[in-house]
Image 1 (cartoon, rainbow, N blue to C red):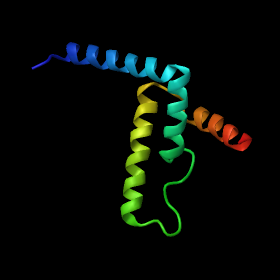
Image 2: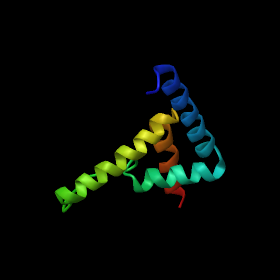
Image 3: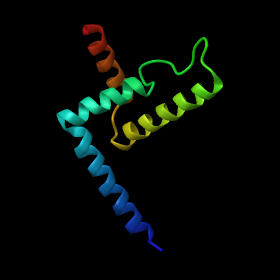
Image 4: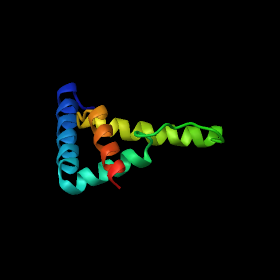
Length: 89
C-alpha cells in the first residue's frame, strides 16, 4: 500500500503531465475542442433532450471540468476566449 506522500507526489507528477500536454499549442486546440463538445460553452439541457442524453452530456461536461480543474485553468476565462473564437468563425 502506498503512503500519503507517495500518492501526493504521483498526483503532482500527473498534474504536471496534464499541464505539459494542454500547455502546448496542439493541447490548447484539443482543450478548446473538448470544451465545445463537452458542454462547457453551452447548456447541457434543452427542449427535446432525453434523460439518457442529459446524463451523457453531464458526464462529458464533468470530465472536461475535471481536466480544467486539474490543470488549474480558469474556466470562465477559457469560455470567454472560446466564445470570441466562435464569434469570429
